[in-house]
Length: 445
Ligand SMILES: [Fe+2]
Image 1 (tube, rainbow, N blue to C red):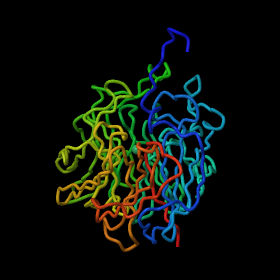
Image 2 (cartoon, rainbow, N blue to C red; image 1 turned 45 degrees about the horizontal axis):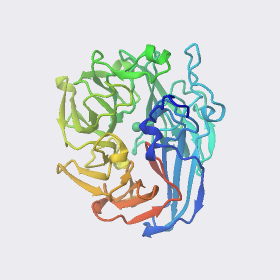
Image 3 (cartoon, rainbow, N blue to C red; image 1 turned 30 degrees about the vertical axis):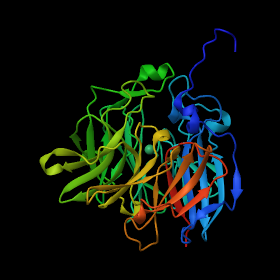
Image 4 (cartoon, protein in one colour; image 1 turned 30 degrees about the horizontal axis):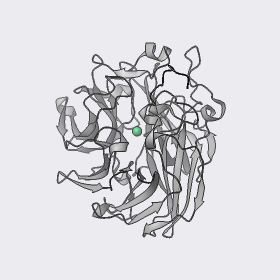
């Protein structure tokens, strides 16, 4: 480099195990330490940003890459990692053109991967879903037979009782928020625009047996920053903060909104109804991105209890430790949960996380599963031990990065024996960069 040239410091998301991998690999019959439970028959998938080229300007803006491990008969049959081949990936197509027009067929599908009605979708909240196959190949954009006209959140909620998939899309132009429902067969059967005061970043939401719960929180779209090409969402001291509840498959006119203390929540654990109130457990940030969009503070477990009869919300801290990626047994979605799982994360970045935690919200206790020095788990996904298994009767699956050898494992913990050594550790042929969310896709039949 020429003398005097400025060396730009690489941002955190392009270094260490946040940095992308460059190869797409396929490996069969992976080495296993311990014993994979033989009834785990299916595919563990996880999504995350993996820019194919230069720095995209923000951790959230890299091309999506899926990492999958297929388990069957106590064996780890294969590992595959594949970029999600969207138009953004293949053609460098732009999500927003020079006139500010949005093309939702352009996606950096990097945030989550969800199956519904026999189809699997890589999701990012700006765009339409991208369908992928069981071997991680890209099928293409899906707009549910032309019925979906907004973006789709990366965090849809499947109701285990009705089989419906509830979700929403948000946008920086009106309508700012739109609610949708897919029926159990995957047909889009309900769409409703929801009034909110402005364009906020709405990453996730929750359902109960009877309601949906929207989070309208003060991380707000800034047009000027967007025009200058920067990451366009920032903290606002003026916007306020509110929770909205609306009957499932309901109408905007039936939504009720409740003011809360300003804060930010990417992810709830779950929500449920009890004695006419709605309880929602979340990973809550006191504020987010006040100092710019690369400054991640820490979140901790809180419980909101919405009391519609008295028009108020109470907020209760549940734990002081810094957590993210909260999950529950998905069979409890919308119903009362006792247990929750999360990554304990002391600085807000996964590189420093060395523990998975399991909360018992009924007892108010927390168990930790620590990993050796240099090892950092990602999101822990609960998989039930069988159709009749009780809550917490199953396994927690997570990709764990080991900086000591610059490699990753798929680790399987027994949820009931959370602090004990993993029941199985599956050695992967390359490291899995720190990413976002995943799911277990069980074999049918
Ligand atoms: Fe998320």
